Image (cartoon, rainbow, N blue to C red; front, side, top):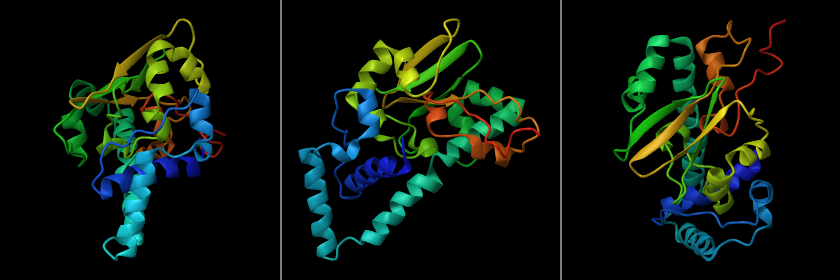
Amino acid sequence: MSKSQNSVGRRGFLKTAATGAAGIVAGAKPGLAQSRQDPDQTVPSDLTLRVKALESLLVDKGLVDRVALDRIVDAFETKIGPRNGARVVARAWVDAAYKKRLLADASTAMEELGFHRHQGEDIVALENTAKIHNLVVCTLCSCYPWPLLGLPPVWYKSAPYRSRAVIDPRGVLKEFGVDVGADVEVRVWDSTSEVRYIVLPERPAGSERLGEDALAALVTRDSMIGTARVTLGAAERPA
């Protein structure tokens, strides 16, 4: 999914919150692949259009600063998350004791790094291994660990993902480019308003020489949902 496509969904979601209309859910499309590829070709929902109209009115009246809204969006995209979650993952990769605490009580472990829950929800960390692959979904709406991952992507809120992740998780993972072997157990976890999840992806082979900051830079939002693996870029691969 391209950065521009992510921005469309994030901006719409955040601006809804900024104007007091919480809980936007992206309109469903015929299939997951399409929902990930062509958000700009879909007619906006009635609620989305009303939010845009309200935003324009507030800006025209001088009650809302469009630049300020853009700064809020940028904060969620680049400062609040998913960099926070990436730091948690990287710390767990380099610190065995911290990893143990994270898997036992992720809510407390994330607070050790200065990240706090905002709605009293419990955070649970799920470890991916060579034999277990975890996938996170919210079948009811779009419950998501905001303090760690920022805003949820458009496809996470779409009806195709929410239904198919449960019915055909291997097929969904394959569409995301993750081929899971028949000998690997796929576990699907359904987020709620009380319990939310972060996946601790497998540390990529060959990353042993990398420090914590460099490791955090490798971790993506999708890998912490379970729809991607963490890989080394050309610059990080051993010579």
